[in-house]
Length: 564
Image (cartoon, rainbow, N blue to C red):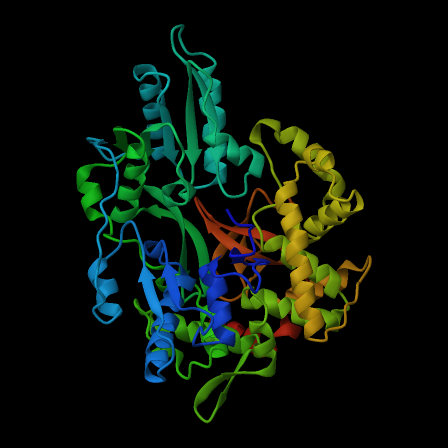
Protein backbone atom coordinates (compact mmCIF):
# COMPACT_ATOMS: atom_id res chain seq x y z
CA UNK A 1 0.00 0.00 0.00
CA UNK A 2 1.21 3.49 -0.78
CA UNK A 3 -0.15 6.96 -0.07
CA UNK A 4 -1.80 8.45 -3.14
CA UNK A 5 0.37 11.22 -4.59
CA UNK A 6 3.66 9.62 -3.51
CA UNK A 7 4.83 6.54 -5.48
CA UNK A 8 1.51 6.41 -7.37
CA UNK A 9 -0.42 9.54 -8.40
CA UNK A 10 -2.85 10.88 -10.95
CA UNK A 11 -3.45 13.99 -13.06
CA UNK A 12 -6.81 14.84 -14.57
CA UNK A 13 -8.15 18.14 -15.85
CA UNK A 14 -8.17 20.60 -12.94
CA UNK A 15 -6.77 18.08 -10.43
CA UNK A 16 -3.11 17.02 -9.97
CA UNK A 17 -2.18 14.58 -7.20
CA UNK A 18 1.47 13.81 -7.95
CA UNK A 19 4.83 14.70 -6.40
CA UNK A 20 8.57 14.41 -7.13
CA UNK A 21 8.38 10.88 -5.68
CA UNK A 22 5.71 9.72 -8.18
CA UNK A 23 6.90 6.88 -10.42
CA UNK A 24 3.57 5.56 -11.70
CA UNK A 25 1.18 8.22 -12.93
CA UNK A 26 -2.37 7.78 -14.16
CA UNK A 27 -3.53 10.64 -16.35
CA UNK A 28 -6.12 11.40 -19.00
CA UNK A 29 -5.19 11.55 -22.66
CA UNK A 30 -5.93 15.29 -22.65
CA UNK A 31 -3.50 15.94 -19.81
CA UNK A 32 -0.67 13.97 -21.44
CA UNK A 33 -1.30 15.99 -24.59
CA UNK A 34 -0.98 19.23 -22.60
CA UNK A 35 2.30 17.98 -21.11
CA UNK A 36 3.55 17.30 -24.64
CA UNK A 37 3.04 20.99 -25.51
CA UNK A 38 5.76 21.82 -22.93
CA UNK A 39 7.89 18.75 -23.71
CA UNK A 40 7.24 17.09 -27.13
CA UNK A 41 9.78 14.33 -26.32
CA UNK A 42 7.92 13.35 -23.13
CA UNK A 43 11.28 13.07 -21.36
CA UNK A 44 9.66 12.41 -17.95
CA UNK A 45 8.42 9.01 -19.13
CA UNK A 46 10.11 5.74 -20.07
CA UNK A 47 6.84 3.85 -20.70
CA UNK A 48 3.49 5.20 -21.92
CA UNK A 49 0.45 2.91 -21.73
CA UNK A 50 -2.51 4.06 -23.82
CA UNK A 51 -5.56 2.21 -22.47
CA UNK A 52 -9.11 1.96 -23.88
CA UNK A 53 -7.65 2.77 -27.29
CA UNK A 54 -10.81 1.57 -29.05
CA UNK A 55 -12.71 4.61 -27.74
CA UNK A 56 -10.70 6.74 -30.18
CA UNK A 57 -11.38 10.04 -28.44
CA UNK A 58 -10.19 13.20 -30.14
CA UNK A 59 -7.29 13.54 -27.64
CA UNK A 60 -6.25 9.89 -27.98
CA UNK A 61 -5.96 10.13 -31.76
CA UNK A 62 -3.74 13.23 -31.53
CA UNK A 63 -1.76 11.52 -28.77
CA UNK A 64 -1.02 8.51 -31.01
CA UNK A 65 0.77 10.85 -33.42
CA UNK A 66 2.57 12.78 -30.65
CA UNK A 67 3.79 9.63 -28.86
CA UNK A 68 4.88 8.03 -32.15
CA UNK A 69 6.86 11.18 -33.07
CA UNK A 70 8.43 11.37 -29.57
CA UNK A 71 9.48 7.71 -29.79
CA UNK A 72 11.09 8.24 -33.21
CA UNK A 73 12.89 11.45 -32.18
CA UNK A 74 14.24 9.95 -28.96
CA UNK A 75 15.63 7.02 -30.94
CA UNK A 76 17.32 9.38 -33.42
CA UNK A 77 18.86 11.44 -30.59
CA UNK A 78 20.06 8.31 -28.78
CA UNK A 79 18.00 9.21 -25.71
CA UNK A 80 16.39 6.73 -23.32
CA UNK A 81 13.95 4.79 -25.56
CA UNK A 82 10.23 5.38 -25.10
CA UNK A 83 8.17 2.21 -24.85
CA UNK A 84 4.55 2.48 -25.99
CA UNK A 85 1.88 -0.07 -25.01
CA UNK A 86 -1.57 0.25 -26.58
CA UNK A 87 -4.35 -1.66 -24.77
CA UNK A 88 -7.96 -2.27 -25.66
CA UNK A 89 -10.78 -4.78 -25.30
CA UNK A 90 -11.86 -4.36 -28.94
CA UNK A 91 -9.96 -2.65 -31.71
CA UNK A 92 -8.81 -2.97 -35.29
CA UNK A 93 -5.53 -4.70 -34.40
CA UNK A 94 -4.02 -4.59 -37.91
CA UNK A 95 -4.58 -0.84 -38.20
CA UNK A 96 -2.88 -0.16 -34.85
CA UNK A 97 0.04 -2.49 -35.54
CA UNK A 98 0.59 -1.00 -38.99
CA UNK A 99 0.41 2.55 -37.66
CA UNK A 100 3.06 1.82 -35.00
CA UNK A 101 5.53 0.46 -37.61
CA UNK A 102 4.49 -3.21 -37.47
CA UNK A 103 4.45 -3.40 -33.66
CA UNK A 104 3.92 -6.92 -32.25
CA UNK A 105 0.44 -7.87 -31.03
CA UNK A 106 -0.22 -9.80 -27.82
CA UNK A 107 -3.63 -11.41 -27.27
CA UNK A 108 -4.89 -12.06 -23.74
CA UNK A 109 -7.84 -14.39 -23.27
CA UNK A 110 -10.67 -12.67 -21.41
CA UNK A 111 -12.68 -14.40 -18.68
CA UNK A 112 -16.06 -13.72 -20.22
CA UNK A 113 -18.75 -16.32 -19.53
CA UNK A 114 -21.02 -17.68 -22.28
CA UNK A 115 -23.73 -15.24 -23.39
CA UNK A 116 -26.93 -16.08 -25.23
CA UNK A 117 -27.93 -13.44 -27.79
CA UNK A 118 -31.50 -12.80 -28.96
CA UNK A 119 -32.28 -10.42 -31.83
CA UNK A 120 -35.73 -9.12 -32.74
CA UNK A 121 -37.46 -10.75 -35.70
CA UNK A 122 -38.63 -7.38 -37.08
CA UNK A 123 -37.06 -3.88 -36.98
CA UNK A 124 -38.37 -1.84 -34.03
CA UNK A 125 -39.83 1.59 -34.89
CA UNK A 126 -39.91 2.56 -31.19
CA UNK A 127 -36.83 1.25 -29.37
CA UNK A 128 -37.99 2.75 -26.04
CA UNK A 129 -41.26 0.82 -26.11
CA UNK A 130 -39.38 -2.32 -27.14
CA UNK A 131 -36.96 -1.85 -24.20
CA UNK A 132 -39.86 -1.41 -21.78
CA UNK A 133 -41.56 -4.61 -23.00
CA UNK A 134 -38.24 -6.53 -22.76
CA UNK A 135 -37.57 -5.38 -19.19
CA UNK A 136 -40.96 -6.56 -17.91
CA UNK A 137 -40.80 -9.80 -19.89
CA UNK A 138 -37.46 -10.59 -18.18
CA UNK A 139 -38.86 -9.45 -14.83
CA UNK A 140 -41.80 -11.83 -14.99
CA UNK A 141 -39.79 -14.85 -16.17
CA UNK A 142 -36.32 -14.67 -14.56
CA UNK A 143 -35.32 -15.31 -10.92
CA UNK A 144 -35.35 -12.10 -8.86
CA UNK A 145 -31.65 -12.36 -7.98
CA UNK A 146 -30.69 -11.65 -11.61
CA UNK A 147 -30.33 -7.95 -12.48
CA UNK A 148 -30.95 -6.14 -15.76
CA UNK A 149 -28.87 -3.46 -17.52
CA UNK A 150 -30.58 -1.41 -20.26
CA UNK A 151 -28.62 0.84 -22.63
CA UNK A 152 -30.38 4.11 -23.52
CA UNK A 153 -29.07 7.34 -25.03
CA UNK A 154 -29.33 10.17 -22.50
CA UNK A 155 -30.59 11.67 -19.26
CA UNK A 156 -34.07 12.71 -20.41
CA UNK A 157 -34.76 9.32 -21.99
CA UNK A 158 -33.49 7.50 -18.88
CA UNK A 159 -35.47 9.63 -16.42
CA UNK A 160 -38.69 9.20 -18.44
CA UNK A 161 -38.17 5.41 -18.66
CA UNK A 162 -37.34 5.25 -14.92
CA UNK A 163 -40.67 6.88 -14.07
CA UNK A 164 -42.60 4.59 -16.45
CA UNK A 165 -40.94 1.43 -15.07
CA UNK A 166 -41.61 2.48 -11.47
CA UNK A 167 -45.26 3.25 -12.25
CA UNK A 168 -45.80 -0.12 -13.96
CA UNK A 169 -43.91 -1.99 -11.21
CA UNK A 170 -46.45 -0.73 -8.63
CA UNK A 171 -49.28 -2.61 -10.39
CA UNK A 172 -47.67 -5.96 -11.15
CA UNK A 173 -49.60 -9.15 -10.29
CA UNK A 174 -49.02 -10.93 -6.98
CA UNK A 175 -46.08 -13.30 -7.04
CA UNK A 176 -43.94 -10.97 -9.16
CA UNK A 177 -40.69 -9.96 -7.44
CA UNK A 178 -40.25 -6.33 -6.44
CA UNK A 179 -38.31 -4.11 -8.84
CA UNK A 180 -35.93 -1.28 -7.99
CA UNK A 181 -35.19 0.97 -11.00
CA UNK A 182 -31.96 2.99 -11.01
CA UNK A 183 -30.88 5.60 -13.54
CA UNK A 184 -27.17 5.99 -14.41
CA UNK A 185 -25.69 8.89 -16.37
CA UNK A 186 -22.75 11.26 -15.97
CA UNK A 187 -24.55 14.26 -14.41
CA UNK A 188 -26.44 12.17 -11.83
CA UNK A 189 -25.36 13.07 -8.25
CA UNK A 190 -22.44 10.88 -7.17
CA UNK A 191 -24.31 9.33 -4.22
CA UNK A 192 -27.04 8.13 -6.61
CA UNK A 193 -24.50 6.76 -9.10
CA UNK A 194 -22.99 4.64 -6.31
CA UNK A 195 -26.37 2.99 -5.62
CA UNK A 196 -26.08 0.87 -8.79
CA UNK A 197 -23.15 -1.04 -7.22
CA UNK A 198 -25.14 -2.05 -4.12
CA UNK A 199 -26.91 -5.40 -4.12
CA UNK A 200 -30.71 -5.27 -4.19
CA UNK A 201 -32.67 -6.53 -1.18
CA UNK A 202 -33.64 -10.21 -1.16
CA UNK A 203 -36.56 -10.94 -3.50
CA UNK A 204 -35.98 -7.65 -5.34
CA UNK A 205 -34.57 -7.15 -8.86
CA UNK A 206 -32.30 -4.26 -9.80
CA UNK A 207 -32.98 -2.68 -13.23
CA UNK A 208 -30.32 -0.16 -14.29
CA UNK A 209 -31.09 2.27 -17.10
CA UNK A 210 -27.77 3.63 -18.34
CA UNK A 211 -26.04 5.63 -21.05
CA UNK A 212 -22.92 4.13 -22.68
CA UNK A 213 -21.07 5.03 -19.42
CA UNK A 214 -21.68 1.35 -18.48
CA UNK A 215 -20.24 0.01 -21.77
CA UNK A 216 -16.57 -0.04 -20.74
CA UNK A 217 -15.98 2.48 -17.94
CA UNK A 218 -17.47 0.47 -15.07
CA UNK A 219 -18.53 -3.08 -14.18
CA UNK A 220 -21.79 -3.42 -12.24
CA UNK A 221 -22.05 -6.64 -10.18
CA UNK A 222 -25.10 -8.89 -10.48
CA UNK A 223 -25.93 -8.13 -14.15
CA UNK A 224 -27.35 -11.24 -15.83
CA UNK A 225 -29.39 -9.59 -18.59
CA UNK A 226 -28.51 -6.79 -21.00
CA UNK A 227 -31.11 -5.01 -23.13
CA UNK A 228 -29.34 -3.21 -25.98
CA UNK A 229 -31.41 -0.62 -27.85
CA UNK A 230 -28.60 -0.32 -30.40
CA UNK A 231 -28.68 3.49 -30.06
CA UNK A 232 -26.21 6.02 -28.68
CA UNK A 233 -25.91 9.80 -28.48
CA UNK A 234 -22.77 10.98 -30.30
CA UNK A 235 -21.27 14.16 -31.71
CA UNK A 236 -21.65 14.94 -35.39
CA UNK A 237 -19.95 17.88 -37.07
CA UNK A 238 -20.58 19.37 -40.49
CA UNK A 239 -17.71 21.56 -41.76
CA UNK A 240 -20.04 22.92 -44.48
CA UNK A 241 -22.54 24.40 -42.00
CA UNK A 242 -20.15 24.73 -39.05
CA UNK A 243 -22.72 22.98 -36.84
CA UNK A 244 -21.63 20.46 -34.19
CA UNK A 245 -24.60 18.59 -32.74
CA UNK A 246 -25.22 15.73 -30.34
CA UNK A 247 -27.39 13.30 -32.28
CA UNK A 248 -28.96 9.90 -31.55
CA UNK A 249 -27.53 7.27 -33.90
CA UNK A 250 -26.81 3.55 -34.30
CA UNK A 251 -23.94 1.99 -32.36
CA UNK A 252 -21.08 0.23 -34.12
CA UNK A 253 -20.60 -3.56 -34.04
CA UNK A 254 -17.71 -3.05 -31.60
CA UNK A 255 -20.00 -1.10 -29.24
CA UNK A 256 -22.72 -3.75 -29.58
CA UNK A 257 -20.23 -6.46 -28.57
CA UNK A 258 -19.03 -4.35 -25.62
CA UNK A 259 -22.63 -4.03 -24.42
CA UNK A 260 -23.26 -7.75 -24.90
CA UNK A 261 -20.16 -8.55 -22.84
CA UNK A 262 -21.64 -6.79 -19.79
CA UNK A 263 -23.99 -9.79 -19.36
CA UNK A 264 -21.12 -12.25 -18.97
CA UNK A 265 -18.80 -10.61 -16.49
CA UNK A 266 -19.59 -12.85 -13.50
CA UNK A 267 -21.60 -15.77 -14.91
CA UNK A 268 -23.37 -16.88 -18.06
CA UNK A 269 -25.88 -14.27 -19.23
CA UNK A 270 -28.31 -13.15 -21.90
CA UNK A 271 -28.36 -10.13 -24.20
CA UNK A 272 -31.56 -8.96 -25.89
CA UNK A 273 -30.68 -6.89 -28.95
CA UNK A 274 -33.59 -4.71 -30.04
CA UNK A 275 -32.61 -4.92 -33.70
CA UNK A 276 -32.57 -7.68 -36.30
CA UNK A 277 -29.50 -9.68 -37.34
CA UNK A 278 -29.77 -8.03 -40.77
CA UNK A 279 -29.67 -4.57 -39.14
CA UNK A 280 -26.65 -5.59 -37.04
CA UNK A 281 -24.76 -6.64 -40.18
CA UNK A 282 -25.23 -3.11 -41.55
CA UNK A 283 -23.69 -1.45 -38.46
CA UNK A 284 -20.21 0.07 -38.90
CA UNK A 285 -17.52 -2.40 -37.82
CA UNK A 286 -15.85 0.12 -35.50
CA UNK A 287 -17.06 3.40 -34.02
CA UNK A 288 -16.08 6.29 -36.29
CA UNK A 289 -13.18 8.03 -34.48
CA UNK A 290 -14.21 11.27 -32.79
CA UNK A 291 -11.58 13.13 -34.80
CA UNK A 292 -13.56 12.43 -37.98
CA UNK A 293 -16.88 13.69 -36.61
CA UNK A 294 -15.98 16.68 -34.42
CA UNK A 295 -15.13 20.34 -34.61
CA UNK A 296 -11.31 20.33 -34.79
CA UNK A 297 -10.64 23.87 -33.51
CA UNK A 298 -9.20 22.54 -30.19
CA UNK A 299 -7.05 19.96 -32.01
CA UNK A 300 -5.59 22.49 -34.46
CA UNK A 301 -4.87 24.91 -31.59
CA UNK A 302 -3.03 22.16 -29.67
CA UNK A 303 -1.05 21.02 -32.72
CA UNK A 304 0.05 24.59 -33.42
CA UNK A 305 1.02 24.94 -29.74
CA UNK A 306 3.12 21.78 -30.28
CA UNK A 307 4.77 23.68 -33.16
CA UNK A 308 3.56 21.17 -35.75
CA UNK A 309 4.41 23.08 -38.96
CA UNK A 310 1.62 21.69 -41.15
CA UNK A 311 -1.55 20.45 -39.48
CA UNK A 312 -2.78 18.88 -42.75
CA UNK A 313 0.26 16.55 -42.91
CA UNK A 314 0.24 15.51 -39.22
CA UNK A 315 0.50 11.72 -38.82
CA UNK A 316 -3.09 10.94 -37.81
CA UNK A 317 -4.05 7.26 -37.61
CA UNK A 318 -7.43 8.18 -39.12
CA UNK A 319 -7.11 11.41 -41.05
CA UNK A 320 -9.88 13.99 -40.62
CA UNK A 321 -11.21 15.53 -43.82
CA UNK A 322 -9.29 18.54 -45.22
CA UNK A 323 -12.61 20.44 -45.09
CA UNK A 324 -12.88 19.85 -41.33
CA UNK A 325 -9.28 21.02 -40.77
CA UNK A 326 -9.85 24.09 -42.96
CA UNK A 327 -13.08 24.91 -41.08
CA UNK A 328 -11.15 24.70 -37.78
CA UNK A 329 -8.44 27.03 -39.09
CA UNK A 330 -11.13 29.52 -40.19
CA UNK A 331 -12.74 29.42 -36.73
CA UNK A 332 -9.39 30.03 -35.01
CA UNK A 333 -8.72 32.85 -37.46
CA UNK A 334 -12.08 34.45 -36.58
CA UNK A 335 -11.17 34.13 -32.88
CA UNK A 336 -7.83 35.85 -33.61
CA UNK A 337 -5.79 32.78 -32.59
CA UNK A 338 -3.85 32.12 -35.84
CA UNK A 339 -2.05 34.00 -38.60
CA UNK A 340 0.04 33.14 -41.68
CA UNK A 341 3.76 33.85 -41.64
CA UNK A 342 5.83 32.96 -44.70
CA UNK A 343 3.18 30.51 -45.88
CA UNK A 344 3.06 28.81 -42.48
CA UNK A 345 0.21 28.83 -40.02
CA UNK A 346 1.31 29.97 -36.55
CA UNK A 347 -0.35 31.02 -33.33
CA UNK A 348 -0.78 34.71 -32.62
CA UNK A 349 0.19 36.01 -29.15
CA UNK A 350 -3.55 35.71 -28.32
CA UNK A 351 -3.56 32.13 -29.67
CA UNK A 352 -0.62 31.22 -27.40
CA UNK A 353 -2.58 32.52 -24.41
CA UNK A 354 -5.68 30.59 -25.54
CA UNK A 355 -3.62 27.36 -25.69
CA UNK A 356 -2.64 27.89 -22.02
CA UNK A 357 -6.21 27.09 -20.94
CA UNK A 358 -7.47 23.44 -20.91
CA UNK A 359 -10.69 24.62 -22.57
CA UNK A 360 -12.43 24.85 -25.93
CA UNK A 361 -11.00 27.83 -27.87
CA UNK A 362 -14.28 29.77 -27.65
CA UNK A 363 -14.16 29.57 -23.82
CA UNK A 364 -10.45 30.49 -23.69
CA UNK A 365 -11.28 33.54 -25.81
CA UNK A 366 -14.22 34.40 -23.50
CA UNK A 367 -11.87 34.54 -20.50
CA UNK A 368 -9.20 36.50 -22.37
CA UNK A 369 -11.79 39.04 -23.54
CA UNK A 370 -13.28 39.52 -20.07
CA UNK A 371 -10.89 42.29 -18.85
CA UNK A 372 -12.12 44.47 -21.73
CA UNK A 373 -15.62 44.20 -20.24
CA UNK A 374 -14.45 44.37 -16.58
CA UNK A 375 -16.09 41.02 -15.70
CA UNK A 376 -13.27 38.46 -15.43
CA UNK A 377 -14.47 37.10 -12.06
CA UNK A 378 -17.99 36.42 -13.38
CA UNK A 379 -16.76 34.95 -16.69
CA UNK A 380 -14.42 32.58 -14.81
CA UNK A 381 -17.41 31.33 -12.82
CA UNK A 382 -19.62 30.88 -15.92
CA UNK A 383 -16.91 29.06 -17.93
CA UNK A 384 -16.18 26.80 -14.93
CA UNK A 385 -19.90 25.96 -14.60
CA UNK A 386 -19.98 25.01 -18.30
CA UNK A 387 -16.80 22.90 -18.04
CA UNK A 388 -18.24 20.23 -15.71
CA UNK A 389 -21.26 17.96 -15.87
CA UNK A 390 -24.52 19.72 -15.02
CA UNK A 391 -24.65 21.22 -11.52
CA UNK A 392 -28.45 21.03 -11.60
CA UNK A 393 -30.38 17.90 -10.79
CA UNK A 394 -34.03 17.83 -11.89
CA UNK A 395 -35.85 14.58 -11.01
CA UNK A 396 -38.95 14.38 -13.25
CA UNK A 397 -41.11 13.07 -10.41
CA UNK A 398 -40.56 16.36 -8.55
CA UNK A 399 -40.77 18.72 -11.53
CA UNK A 400 -43.23 21.17 -9.91
CA UNK A 401 -41.12 21.35 -6.74
CA UNK A 402 -37.94 21.93 -8.78
CA UNK A 403 -39.54 24.76 -10.75
CA UNK A 404 -40.85 26.40 -7.59
CA UNK A 405 -37.43 26.25 -5.85
CA UNK A 406 -35.50 27.48 -8.92
CA UNK A 407 -37.69 30.57 -9.47
CA UNK A 408 -35.59 32.69 -7.12
CA UNK A 409 -32.45 32.08 -9.22
CA UNK A 410 -33.89 32.51 -12.71
CA UNK A 411 -32.57 35.36 -14.83
CA UNK A 412 -34.62 36.62 -17.78
CA UNK A 413 -31.26 37.14 -19.52
CA UNK A 414 -30.65 33.41 -19.91
CA UNK A 415 -29.04 30.25 -18.56
CA UNK A 416 -25.51 31.65 -18.05
CA UNK A 417 -26.75 34.35 -15.68
CA UNK A 418 -29.07 31.86 -13.93
CA UNK A 419 -26.13 29.50 -13.30
CA UNK A 420 -24.06 32.44 -12.03
CA UNK A 421 -26.88 33.30 -9.60
CA UNK A 422 -26.99 29.69 -8.32
CA UNK A 423 -23.20 29.59 -7.85
CA UNK A 424 -23.26 32.84 -5.86
CA UNK A 425 -25.99 31.43 -3.59
CA UNK A 426 -23.95 28.22 -3.16
CA UNK A 427 -20.93 30.30 -2.10
CA UNK A 428 -23.05 32.36 0.31
CA UNK A 429 -23.97 29.20 2.24
CA UNK A 430 -20.36 27.89 2.01
CA UNK A 431 -21.43 24.90 -0.08
CA UNK A 432 -23.86 23.59 2.57
CA UNK A 433 -25.02 20.09 1.46
CA UNK A 434 -28.50 20.48 2.91
CA UNK A 435 -28.92 23.69 0.90
CA UNK A 436 -27.82 21.79 -2.21
CA UNK A 437 -30.36 19.05 -1.53
CA UNK A 438 -33.19 21.54 -0.94
CA UNK A 439 -32.35 23.42 -4.16
CA UNK A 440 -31.70 20.34 -6.35
CA UNK A 441 -28.05 21.28 -6.85
CA UNK A 442 -25.38 18.60 -7.39
CA UNK A 443 -23.01 19.45 -4.52
CA UNK A 444 -20.14 17.29 -5.84
CA UNK A 445 -20.20 18.94 -9.25
CA UNK A 446 -20.51 22.37 -7.62
CA UNK A 447 -17.37 21.69 -5.53
CA UNK A 448 -15.63 20.68 -8.76
CA UNK A 449 -16.69 24.03 -10.29
CA UNK A 450 -14.91 25.79 -7.41
CA UNK A 451 -11.73 23.76 -8.07
CA UNK A 452 -11.90 24.40 -11.83
CA UNK A 453 -12.43 28.11 -11.22
CA UNK A 454 -9.43 28.30 -8.87
CA UNK A 455 -7.16 26.71 -11.48
CA UNK A 456 -8.44 28.89 -14.33
CA UNK A 457 -7.93 31.94 -12.10
CA UNK A 458 -4.31 30.84 -11.45
CA UNK A 459 -3.71 30.74 -15.22
CA UNK A 460 -5.18 34.26 -15.53
CA UNK A 461 -2.88 35.51 -12.77
CA UNK A 462 0.16 33.93 -14.51
CA UNK A 463 -0.91 35.75 -17.69
CA UNK A 464 -1.00 39.00 -15.66
CA UNK A 465 -4.70 39.57 -16.38
CA UNK A 466 -6.54 42.15 -14.25
CA UNK A 467 -9.12 40.38 -12.06
CA UNK A 468 -12.16 42.66 -12.10
CA UNK A 469 -15.80 42.09 -11.20
CA UNK A 470 -18.78 43.66 -12.92
CA UNK A 471 -20.77 43.34 -9.67
CA UNK A 472 -24.42 43.72 -10.63
CA UNK A 473 -23.85 44.84 -14.25
CA UNK A 474 -24.95 41.79 -16.25
CA UNK A 475 -24.82 43.77 -19.52
CA UNK A 476 -21.02 43.59 -19.61
CA UNK A 477 -21.10 39.81 -19.00
CA UNK A 478 -23.53 39.33 -21.89
CA UNK A 479 -21.45 41.58 -24.17
CA UNK A 480 -18.38 39.48 -23.38
CA UNK A 481 -20.26 36.25 -24.21
CA UNK A 482 -21.56 37.80 -27.45
CA UNK A 483 -18.01 38.73 -28.50
CA UNK A 484 -16.67 35.18 -28.05
CA UNK A 485 -19.71 33.03 -28.93
CA UNK A 486 -20.73 35.04 -32.02
CA UNK A 487 -20.37 31.89 -34.20
CA UNK A 488 -23.06 30.28 -32.01
CA UNK A 489 -25.77 32.90 -32.50
CA UNK A 490 -29.43 32.57 -33.51
CA UNK A 491 -32.08 35.14 -34.37
CA UNK A 492 -35.85 35.11 -33.99
CA UNK A 493 -37.69 34.96 -37.34
CA UNK A 494 -41.01 36.67 -38.19
CA UNK A 495 -42.78 33.28 -37.96
CA UNK A 496 -41.62 32.80 -34.33
CA UNK A 497 -38.90 30.24 -35.07
CA UNK A 498 -35.12 30.63 -34.71
CA UNK A 499 -32.38 30.31 -37.29
CA UNK A 500 -28.62 30.27 -36.72
CA UNK A 501 -26.93 33.51 -37.79
CA UNK A 502 -24.25 31.80 -39.90
CA UNK A 503 -25.85 28.82 -41.70
CA UNK A 504 -29.55 29.78 -41.29
CA UNK A 505 -30.23 26.33 -39.83
CA UNK A 506 -33.62 26.11 -38.07
CA UNK A 507 -33.12 25.64 -34.31
CA UNK A 508 -35.31 25.72 -31.19
CA UNK A 509 -34.79 26.58 -27.52
CA UNK A 510 -34.33 23.42 -25.42
CA UNK A 511 -37.10 22.78 -22.84
CA UNK A 512 -34.50 22.76 -20.02
CA UNK A 513 -33.55 26.40 -20.75
CA UNK A 514 -34.95 29.20 -18.58
CA UNK A 515 -35.79 30.94 -21.89
CA UNK A 516 -37.98 28.06 -23.14
CA UNK A 517 -41.22 30.05 -22.79
CA UNK A 518 -39.63 33.32 -23.99
CA UNK A 519 -38.94 34.71 -27.44
CA UNK A 520 -35.81 36.89 -27.20
CA UNK A 521 -34.82 38.50 -30.53
CA UNK A 522 -31.22 37.28 -30.45
CA UNK A 523 -29.31 34.68 -28.43
CA UNK A 524 -25.94 32.95 -28.25
CA UNK A 525 -25.76 29.30 -27.19
CA UNK A 526 -23.11 26.80 -26.12
CA UNK A 527 -24.16 23.74 -28.08
CA UNK A 528 -26.81 22.00 -30.16
CA UNK A 529 -28.61 18.76 -29.36
CA UNK A 530 -30.41 16.96 -32.17
CA UNK A 531 -33.35 14.75 -31.20
CA UNK A 532 -36.77 15.41 -32.74
CA UNK A 533 -35.51 18.97 -33.48
CA UNK A 534 -32.20 20.77 -33.37
CA UNK A 535 -32.19 22.33 -29.89
CA UNK A 536 -29.98 25.13 -28.55
CA UNK A 537 -28.67 24.51 -25.03
CA UNK A 538 -27.29 27.01 -22.49
CA UNK A 539 -28.52 30.31 -23.92
CA UNK A 540 -27.78 33.96 -23.24
CA UNK A 541 -29.84 36.92 -24.48
CA UNK A 542 -27.66 39.33 -26.49
CA UNK A 543 -28.08 42.38 -28.69
CA UNK A 544 -27.59 41.76 -32.44
CA UNK A 545 -25.41 44.89 -32.62
CA UNK A 546 -22.94 43.34 -30.15
CA UNK A 547 -22.48 40.36 -32.50
CA UNK A 548 -21.81 42.67 -35.44
CA UNK A 549 -19.29 44.64 -33.35
CA UNK A 550 -17.54 41.38 -32.43
CA UNK A 551 -16.96 40.23 -36.03
CA UNK A 552 -18.15 42.74 -38.65
CA UNK A 553 -16.39 41.06 -41.59
CA UNK A 554 -17.82 37.66 -40.61
CA UNK A 555 -21.42 38.90 -40.49
CA UNK A 556 -21.01 40.95 -43.70
CA UNK A 557 -19.90 37.77 -45.50
CA UNK A 558 -22.81 35.78 -44.05
CA UNK A 559 -25.27 38.51 -45.08
CA UNK A 560 -23.92 38.51 -48.64
CA UNK A 561 -24.08 34.69 -48.82
CA UNK A 562 -27.71 34.74 -47.60
CA UNK A 563 -28.66 37.28 -50.30
CA UNK A 564 -26.93 35.25 -53.01
